Length: 575
Image (cartoon, rainbow, N blue to C red):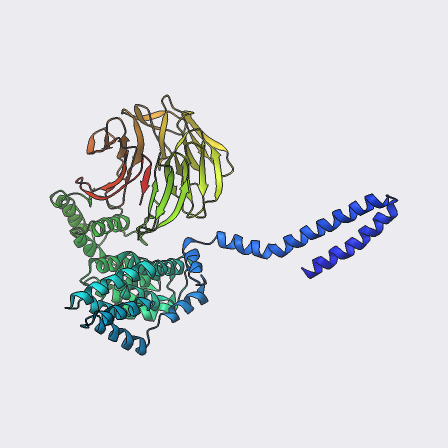
């Protein structure tokens, strides 16, 4: 900067000399002098502020987890995280003091009890084993105070722990496996434990292998699952013996990931292990076991993990018969291609567009709002692989992509944009409700596909074969790349449609007040009554997210409501 200022001074001297040689009168020369001084001043100010502006720009592009940590005075990098973990180490003196305070919670004198509680509240992090003991105390006041301390810990300490886990996974920072295992051990929150587990899998390198091998014998199955999954990614052949032992683990999750690791090594014993897991009482275990089997063998016996046990049994028998006959000789296709979450949301996160309640929100697994965008009449929102959010900005007549700082990074005019879908090729499928058309738009805003609808356009999806699923007033149809109808289904007002992996189509009909699943031969195989549903989305676990006039709701295949949130007026929900 000093060099720049010196340059300005030299240039100023030459400029002043030139002014004097021009022959201008004194008044005009002074005006030019003042103008030049102003320019130099503004440039200097700009140059002084530039580092601050650069810092601000860097901060604005950081992830949500990095911003949370900065807010807590923790630098979002390896050194900052190492310093953070060092600050959590529990000393013997702290343990003795904390234990004494917990004992005082049952004192006969109220003043002693309340003083002890106040002192406990000042401790940044109470040793987990002492808090667990207090929660099981026979003294009711000790239990009551311990529960209050636990809630305070989850409220104040939980978000930081979540951000730490997320950042380690985002940056793939190896060498933190032991610390992440500590988070699993000390947390009572399943969301935090899941985050720590996934972060171990994402970030571990060969430098973590010794910690991971020891973690395989840990009493907590979250830790054992993390160890198995991470070792499956790192030098897996050396850990074949551990994976074999994992097949007999008491935890079905450990058995599942051990079988997957062996499948990726071409071990045929994984087939029978996966077959046994098809009878699991846990829907997600059944779903994943079936998925791995289909990937591994390229066979599909139409096993539906969300069906009732009596419906599943014939499908399980088909798998058992095939494995008995071909399991030792059939070609196995590995490694397993892990299916990405279609929503691109982190585990436990929910993305909600509130329709005519005029906002979009993303909640983390703890229920905290981590993104909010206020706009009038927003019918849908989708999470992109980049982490940005695609919004159908109905009243602003556009589809817009926003980053997590609420900045518009891309937009395209779309009159009455009711829905917008990201495509696998990076383009956007935009649905103009009022202009009655569906458009595929490139990132440089060129329309490469367009089809008009007779009625008001409502929704659209690109199918794997290149055809396009479209819903409009009174009709759901599939068109080929030239716009020719190849399939039609009569409806009343199908505002939301979704193609399913099994070839069926999910239809949310506002006027008929139901969500239905329709087969290619137009048979209704599932139906759920709702108040004017405008959107439906099938989750990997077989449940269906439905958005109606006043609530977001998740229902199981047997139509039980397992999650509900009110406050919307139409819109969309993603998990």
